[in-house]
Image (cartoon, rainbow, N blue to C red; front, top):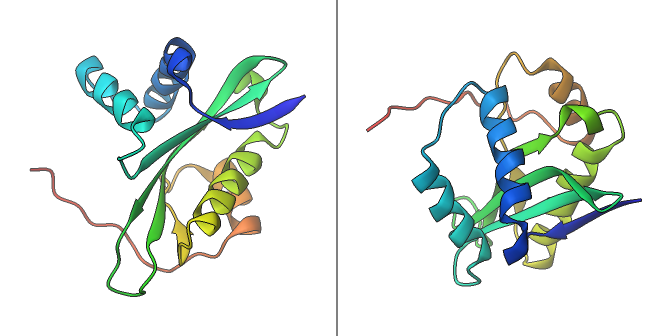
Length: 146
């Protein structure tokens, strides 16, 4: 049985395991202090950040984070799906799609104009899913670390 549900205070250890798996996949190392702040933000109803877990047979096996924000392109807010991860042992069961659909529903419930996200150009497996359930915008990301 698969359920998608918002993160809860007692989920920290399971969330952290998945969050570290996500970091390993993208070859990044986010300091634990930053991760603890992110966790507090995900639980704070005053924050625009939200998180959910995919739970398979009572075990969290996937996560998604999304952030609501204003945009100059619409009156409604946009929803940025920032992080999506499914544990390697649970892949191929539609969990990524279910996590994205959870974000779609949450964003629609708050009146968002759209949901959007980025992925790495080498993430071809995920892009095959994304091409089925969304549209490529054609925009490329540029960034500068400060």
